[in-house]
Image 1: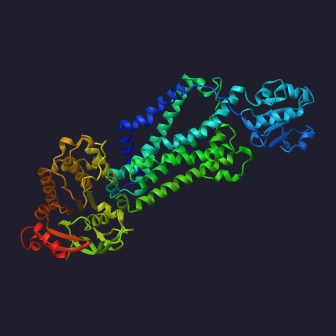
Image 2: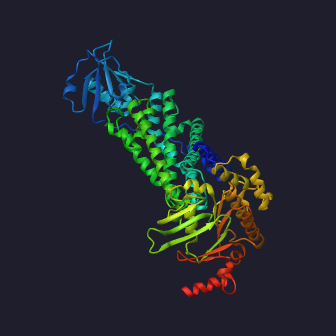
Length: 381
Length: 244
């Protein structure tokens, strides 16, 4: 009797999840530990760290119609400017570092800037200093952008200090956290379902059943992904508990994280996609390794690759990067996470990333299927 | 008219990186309902033959048919027709009970839990495993594991049963149970191919014996025809010495 592939996927996934949740070690490592690890870690490591603001090399400035271009703009080696076609374009933060608007109270224009973005703060700081008379400039901030930002000046920050700090924090930390979680959380399950089968000798009997191998692979992927996502959720809940119990660990306890519904939805999809992707990679790699222990060693190279991608994305300017970065594996995902965390999503980037995640997962499943077709019994010897 | 359920024609197998052939031009047929004992020294090609039958390996050359299906062209149909046991270490899932292990394989072979209920109670009675059917496999003795593995291999009522060393490591009673079960298969017109190093058991329980040596078929026939003097074990030793 033949059954549909969905039937096989369900059968394999249910059995694997049953096994996973019956293993106290797996449950402890994947679900319980994350809940207590971060509260503990945050409690131990409480301390303040000020964010550093990098100097920008080049600023893009938007000028409202009517704002005269100042002499320093034309001479400047660090500024490019253009006049806006509409008063305040949607998502202007991806195009300009700051916008100069007319000031009803005086001659000097107002500077609209994104105080959750280090480059925008630097641009504001630079332009303000150019505009202000030299005596004010010298006495005022002495190069400290935070002081400039706080003073009675030309600046019109986009967010409150608490909100800006929260956004900065999320933009910096979320790509790293997402990659670390999505690599490490599904690994125990994925290793057990692939190289674990080989280690306990159950792979050959499994492959000798009438179940289509694609169904077995997809069932295993579903189970390991569900277990991985549960574990990721446990980690996130752990972090939330930590931030409630010891808010000072975040550096500034007044920080707020005003995430919008669309941001949360995009971030959730990205995290889910990333977790499924790494689960698929880990299952495929698990078929090459000879033991669960060997499969678990994969975490290190995967983390290094993942961190490389995040580091690259962190050094990119969201609005002024080459289009190619939206198509570089993993870098595009890290970049989309950063965009979503900062609420500076570029539709083309996010859409490309989602499409690529699907392509990567399909490729991994195809590769896993190929591994199944190989003569595994010989490879296992 | 012959009723060959397994047809093997000039099967050869060479593994990458190896300097010798695991199987060399191997040919034999097995009729429906026959019990075949496959013997040979370590590395003779018994397991390789069984793995090709199970569609886990592909032959380098030659043709093999099981229940009318070519193993290379129609592996899915072949898998539906066979039940296989890969020795006693062929992994049970320790965190599942014997019943869950067996039902999982039944499901993978396309049977629903309800449909398989009757077969499961018959098999557990036949293999005397009612007492531990709902115990988790992690706590099983070797005999209990082996019985569960056999039940798992036959739950979908396959026409052909391939058993790689089914009684290795078992005590006398468990071993006797397994061979008793193999004989019962004949009554149900099932074909059984089993390998073993216990030549006494092979002699006693097989309709026909196939002796492999370095990938070649050395001899084939009913035990009584093969044995010229003493037992099958004596005869096997004589043959080995003659070759060397």
